[in-house]
Image (cartoon, rainbow, N blue to C red; front, side, top):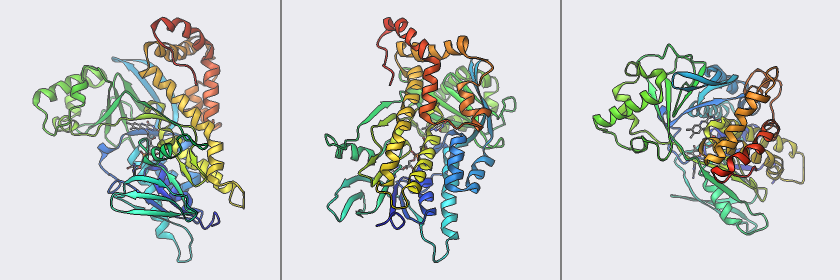
Amino acid sequence: MSSQQASYVVIGAGPVGLLAALGLAKRGHSVTVYEGRESLDQRREESYPIGVNLRGIRALRDVGGSILASRVEDHGEIIDSFDIYSGKRRVAQAVAGTIRSQTRFAVTKAIYDECVAFEASKGPESKGGVRVVFGKKLDRFEVVEDGTTAGRLHFSDQVVDLPVGVRVVAADGGGSIVRRCFVEATKGKENEIKETLVPWNVSFRVMFCDKSPLSYLDPKIHYIMSGVYVAVSGSSSDPWTFALSCRPGAPHHDLFHLHTDSPTPAQIEELRAHLRKACPLTAERLDDHISEEELRAFFGRRIFTGNLVHISRCDYNGWVVMLGDAAHALFPPTGEGINSGLDDVHALMSAIDATSSGASVSPFSHYATNRQPSVDALHSIARDIWLSQSGSTADKIVSMGSNILFNVFSHDKSKPTEAELRYGPPAKDALLEYPEVWKRHLENVGGYRRALRWIAAPFGHVTADQ
Ligand SMILES: Cc1cc2nc3c(=O)[nH]c(=O)nc-3n(C[C@H](O)[C@H](O)[C@H](O)COP(=O)(O)OP(=O)(O)OC[C@H]3O[C@@H](n4cnc5c(N)ncnc54)[C@H](O)[C@@H]3O)c2cc1C
C-alpha cells in the first residue's frame, strides 16, 4: 500500500491526536480516531489554563490552516508576563508577549471543529477524511505481525484487526496504554522501547471567579503565588481561573484531596482560609469574587496529576508512532506540554511530506529518528524545572540556585533572557528547536551548576545532568 493510499488509526482525540488526524486527512488519507471519552467534555472544570506559544500557533497554522490558528489566537488573550509573588510582593517576572492564554478544552474544540468542517466541505471525489469514534477506550494493543494482520486493538466491546499497511498514531496522553503495551512487547528485544516515569509530586484543582471580575488584576498577566495560579484563560471577558496546587505533606493536603459533593461548613471555611493565606493578593476581596457555591463545588472537582514521561524511541517498526504526552509528558510549569505535542505533529507532517515520493524509509521511522533529540531535550528541560520544585534539597540548590545566580551576576541586560527568547518579542525571529534551548540553558548556567554541586553535596544526593 503506498503512502497516499494508506489509512491511519489515531488513538486519543486530545489536541495532538486531532491535529494529527486533520493533517493526515488533508494529505488525502482516511483516518479513524478512537477516543475513550463519550464526547469532548465541555465542562470548564475538566479543562485548565494553558499558554499556546508561537510554536503551537505555527503547528496549528501549518498543519490545520490559518482559520484554525486565528480561532485560537483571536480568543486567547496575549500574556505579557508571568509574575511570581511572595505574599503581596512581586519577586520575579518572566516577560512574555507572544503566548496566548487558552484552555486545553478550547484548543481541542477548535481543532475538532476544523475536522468537522473538513469533512463537511469534502466533495464526492475527495480523498481522505476524519472519523472520530467516541466512547472507545482502548484496553490493550496487541502486536500480531503475521504478514496479514499488523496488530489488534482491544476495546471493551470490540476487537479491531489492523491489516498490514495501516499506520497507528498513539496520542492517548501521559498515561498512554499504547506506550505501555509497546514497552512490554519490546522488552529485551533489539527494538526495545524503554520508558522512564517520574511522578509530578504535585496535584492541581481548579476554581472559578464568577461573582465579580478581578478588576484590580491585569488579564494580560498570569499570577503565580505560593500554591495558586490566577489567570484569565481565553479572552478578558472569560472568568478568572484559580488553579490550586498541593504537594504531599502540605498542611492542606487532606482537605485538598477530599472528594465530596457535600463538604461541611468547617471544611469550606478551611478552604477559604487556605485561599486567603496562599493568595494574599486577592484575600481581602475573596468573598466578593468566589461564591460559597463555587467553594463547595471545588470538593467535587477532578484532581489533575501525572508523571514526567521519557521514552527511548517514539516509533515501533515504522507503523506505530507516539506523539504528545504519550511520548513525552512534561511538568505543567514547563509551559511546553501542548506546544511540544502540536510541534510533534508539525514534525510528523514534514516527515510524511519528505518521504511521500517513494523514499525507502517509513515516514514514522524518519520522524522518530529526527525527533528523538527533541524528545530527549524536552525531558531534560522539564526535569530541571521538576528538580527545582519537587526535587531533594540538594537538587533544588543546584537547579534553582544556578538560575538565580546567572540572572543576578551573569546575564547581560542588553541581551534577551532565556524566557524572552522563547516567549517574548525576540521569539518572533527565532523559533528555537528544543535541543538548542537546552544547550543554551546549560551554557548559561553550567558553571554555576558545577560549583553548586559541591555546595549542595552535604544536603543529600544531587541528580546527575542528562
Ligand atoms: C494541570 C495541568 C496544567 C497544564 N498546563 C499546561 C500549560 O500551561 N502549558 C502547556 O503547554 N501544557 C500544559 N499542560 C499539558 C497539556 O495539557 C498536555 O501536554 C496536552 O494536553 C497534551 O495533549 P495530548 O493530546 O498529547 O494528550 P491529552 O490532552 O492528554 O489527550 C489524550 C486523549 O486521549 C484520550 N485517551 C486516553 N487514554 C485512552 C485510551 N486508552 N483509549 C482511547 N482514548 C484515550 C483521552 O481521553 C484524551 O482525550 C498541563 C496539564 C495539566 C494536567
